[in-house]
Length: 157
View 1 (cartoon, one colour):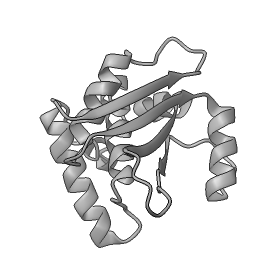
View 2 (cartoon, rainbow, N blue to C red):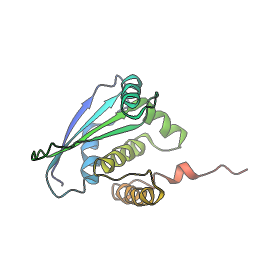
View 3 (tube, rainbow, N blue to C red):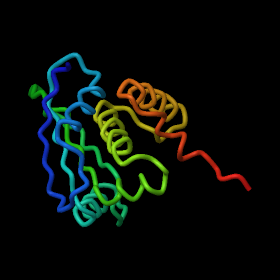
């Protein structure tokens, strides 16, 4: 058990969001820090996701997960890792498109976002390989398969 506190906020008006205890489990498993910390995980609909994605990334569409690492002002030590904003409708449709279970894709979004909060990135190929390998390892530890395999499988032609 890690020293991670999860502030769970579900403002999505749908039935398909997994139980809060799963979000706690997934976030804890992906928290690699040694010190106690807190993360907010907010489950939103498409409009809120699209607004945030547009404001912070310049992309005018909803996205699966947005990560907002907390950056404390100099001399201030607050154990906040940051915030994850996960868009339920995008996660649900991606799971279907990628032939994954809903639960496995939700878990992957939490793991992926938690790694972003800890400075992992996938912009450069080398960084992407490191991050993806860690995601695969963490997902296996949680009992899920490689989250990238389903995406890469091409139908036989």
